[in-house]
Length: 133
Image (tube, rainbow, N blue to C red; front, side, top):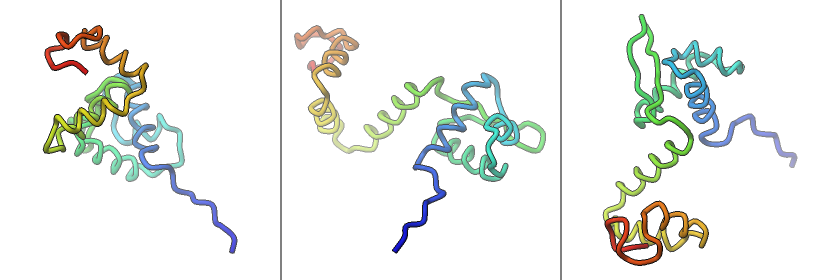
């Protein structure tokens, strides 16, 4: 049996491309503007659907622009988006302490050092306003 190559994009790839277009523009874009910026062979309705989903997730804001909406990202870069996703996951958990403990226990030594530095905790348990990492 031969495999038929999938024409589907990896999960989240189109959302990432749409966000990249919004970040690059640095001003609100309509679905038609995003379609033109991507230069891809995608229907405007597909772009509009992706933008509506991003709006539902709180990743973009929208304002009326004639009969359409114009979209602006609520986060300014990929790092901000990753941080927002991490916060969302943390807020889903009923036991924040356990979620954070498991997250920290899976960090590499380098990431743990970086987190300690960001929290102002050079290794003692007194920095960062918490119990230390």
